[in-house]
Structure formats: C-alpha cells, structure tokens
Image 1 (spheres, one colour):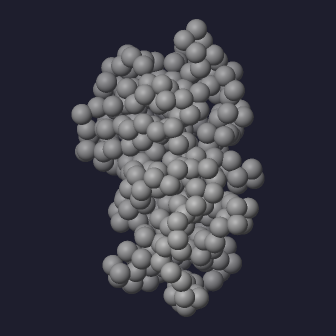
Image 2 (image 1 turned 180 degrees about the horizontal axis):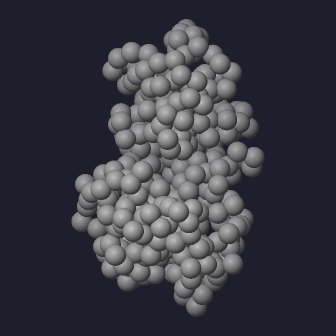
Image 3 (image 1 turned 180 degrees about the vertical axis):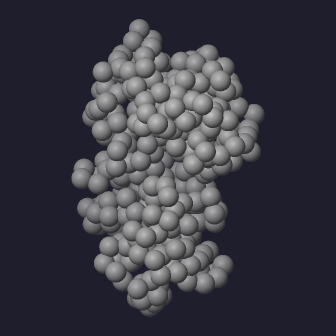
Length: 342
C-alpha cells in the first residue's frame, strides 16, 4: 500500500489520535472520525485530544469530523479504534462507505482489544459479518498511545488471513520508530490482546493490595499459560502467545501506569468497586468488558482459567480480592506446565 494512501481513522481516543498522527506524518491523506460534534470542533481547533492525549499534535492536513460519510469518503483503508462494546454499531455506520474497489477488498483494521459480549466474536469476526466487502485485519501489540504519539520505539503485529494483505498493512504503518511485523494467526493475536487486559486487572488488583514483585511475576507467567491454553483451543498458534501480541502486550499492560486496566485494578485492590474504579480511570477499561466473555469462552472450550475466573468473581460478585488471592494460592497442587498445550 502506498504511503500516500487515503485512510480513515474511526475513533478519536488516545490511540486513534496517535495513529492518525503517524499516518499523516508519513504523507497519508488522513481523516479522523469522532461521534461528538463538540469533540470534533475541539480537536480541529487545538489539533490535539486534550483530555485523552495532551501534547500529541495532529498535522494540519488531518481532517477531524463527526460526519461518518465525510470521514470515509474515497478512503482506501479504515482503522477502527473504538471500544469493543460499540464496535459492531460503528461498523454498521461505516457500511455504506466501505465497498470493494478495483484493487480488491479494502482493509478494515481493528485496533480494538476485546471480545463481543453476546456472540463471543473476536473483532475481525464482527468485521467479516458486517462488512463482507472488506479485508479483516488486526493491529495489536504493546503499544501505549502515550509513547506512539511521541515517536518512542514501538513494535506491533499486523495480522490477516491473507499474508499479502498483512504485508500491505505493514507497509502502511511502518516507520523508523514504529516497527510492524506480520502474521496470519489472526485468532491468536486477537485472543492475546483481549485476554491480557483481564490478566492486567488481576495484576493491578495485586498491586493495589500491596503485594510485591513476586506476585506480579506469578500473575504474568500464569496469565500467559491461561491465554495460551484458551487461544490454542480456539485455533491460535502457540508461538503467537510468546510474541508481541501475547506476552509482550501482557508485560507492558501489567507493568505500566499508562495501562488503564492496571490502574483500574489498583483502585479495586485498594477497595473501590468496579464501577468506581472505571469512573476514576475516565477511559474505557476493556478488561472489564472482556472478563465475562473470557470466562464464557473458557467454559465453551473446557479450559480451566483460574485467574480469569477470580477476576470475574471480584468484579461482578463482590468477592473480596484477598479471598480471591487466597483461593488461587490454595488450589490443588499442580505441575507447572501440565504437559504440552496440545
């Protein structure tokens, strides 16, 4: 895909703004869509999202609009950066403007790390269902917007079932500070991206209760095991969970204060309710949205996921986090690996 590509970024949150800036600085014709007319006016005037990503400035060439048709008109690629709960509705609004063209299917690139609640679909599954004239792509990895927006070195994975489409998206985003790898394991990439948010909530809860580095290391490593077990049962590759969209994303989400999931977990560990913590964070906490779906998938595929189960009980059943940790520690004795994943 040419660097002068025409790209619509759907979503003006922190990561949407960071990616729009990256693409515009590469010479792409970029538009950014936001639902709010007021938000569109504010970002257009200040060239930044003051609330979500202050100080990261959009080039003057970037159009910011609350008109979906204006944002999508004549675009060759669509980057969707909205919460999972609104993902399907957003695609439905995009549908009249995403059409197959002479060069083939336009890529619709999901940067949303979540699972649809009712259907248990991954985001690319939703793209395939709502936009059959598009190529479903996932872009995922350890990529805090606060760092991408300031050109700090970052690596990410572009996943598509068709390797050539993945390479086209790689070409679209690659810069000297934003390294893009390719993969055809869409299921593995998306599963890792969604599940790591749930594990990061658990790590944050442990931090909030004052537990130490030992507990966090245990949470991360056992979290990788849970992610890998479920992801491979769903059809993902075991190796994907050792990569950027698996352990890479999990480490940064469990360790960084940029992580809204970790921040929410810390607040819950200090005694806040789930609702109070999410309100305090002031951004969508995808781990909360994904927790129930992750548990439902573990039941569907017959995969034991004690950390995911404990997070659900703390979030939605009012279980005291200390009781949850004690229950995890006192589970039946196990071998660490339990043998091969398959």
